[in-house]
Amino acid sequence: MPKLALKVDVNTYRGTRVGVPRLVEVMQRHQVQASFFFTMGKDRTGRAIRHIFRSGCLSKASRLSIWKHYGLKTMLYGTLLPAPDIGRKCADTMRAVRDAGFEVGIHGYDQNRWKDYVSSRDMAWTKREMQRAVDRFIEIFGIASKSYAAAGWQLNRHALRLMQHFGFNYTSDTRGTQPFTPTWNAEIVACTQLPTTLPTLDELINRNGITEDNVVQHLLQLTKNPPPNGHVFTLQAELEGGKWLPVFEQLLEGWKEQGYDIVSLRLYVQGLPASLPRHEIVMRAVEGSVGTQAVQA
Image (cartoon, helix red, strand yellow):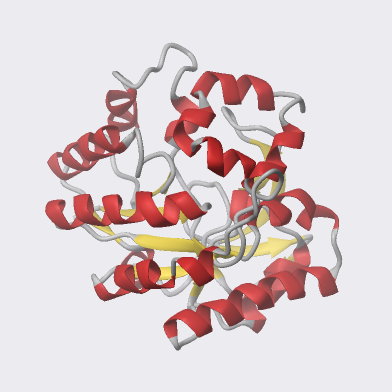
């Protein structure tokens, strides 16, 4: 049976408090698994507003009516409103996800700061950001995380080296076609990389004739013929756990009809070959997104 792994990126206080429980309820009802990657520190989403006039940002925000998904308060956190500490305020919600049988991992500490600066920062800055997330995870769950999914698919070579240092069994920080052993400028990183293999809903909806009404059919066409190692699909607690929850539920039903075993990344990686191909990671534009992301070359 082909596998399709669900990776849930949890970026905000609202996404953790509201979107995550809604997704857990739907997944339990459909008897599927997933991996939830939490932002462990403060929600400073409001600071992203300063990027709105970058090339492509305003267009994407308008295309998706992003403020309707995130809510006014979220769009002001870290500027006109104090930034809520997600790890402090939502620890019970995070533990409830684990207690419900789902895999939990790290998405970062301050996901907006990571996305803004990691590409140009040194080892000391990168280690400090990752260490804060690692320490907060241990504080909440009592054990170290075994998985990591970098915010916004943003990386530098120091982050990749630190994936080994922190002892992660795997990470999911890239876009690509199949699981691989990553290299960066030919330097091998001994930590399995599980790339997101499918486009995300926010990259598809309201582009090229794709709408909320037909996006499910579009994605199901992409998954009609399973590749040897299946697929990884990334969703956001703020979107699929919000207004797009009915769309996500239709996807689950469609993938089950196609014969997929819908699993967590932890279960997905257990079924992979012992030896994986090596691929370079490059920063490259991804259709439907803004800027560049870490991509399997």
